[in-house]
Length: 236
Image (cartoon, rainbow, N blue to C red; front, top):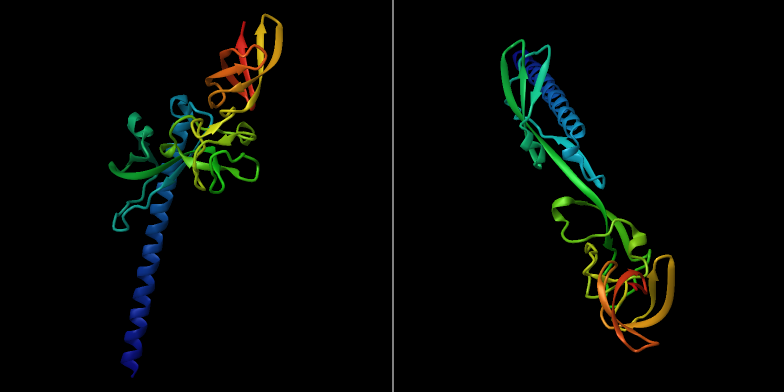
């Protein structure tokens, strides 16, 4: 009985020692990768080329090292990365120890997102966009296509021109600030003067699009630039 107890105690001690050893290794692995992630963050921040879009939010996430990787004690770690790596989602960083003359590689995951406007629910063509059916969502940049909207104010009062599912990224080709058949204000400007008249939209368009408008006073068709909800501009 005594021998069995001693054997059990030995196993317990050994397993505790192994656990502690693994914990120490995990701590060293984690610390070195946190330093690597900090290095990548600093590299991304110091060069405007990688953060040229102020609407992009960038976060770096260190990836776990293989737990079997043995890392010798080191007074000072140094890190290096190829410039073109900084443009990738998965960055390979070289980790070296100058006083021990060894090196290894770690991996950093880079998350780049933009806050853009998406639909909160399913919508049908002609549905009006309000603060209740749109929201801001941090979206990976690789999922963004086309001309998107960055503020809710940009889409309030517009209407969707096709069936839209919840979570859909709203782009300029999905909404119309002026929709076909809408009554619009035509702002004709020349120099410092501006004249306002009314018209009917013969086409749909988002802000910035040039569409055909029928002037209700002259009954002529003109081409005008959509400037806001129910408003177009022409130069004379």
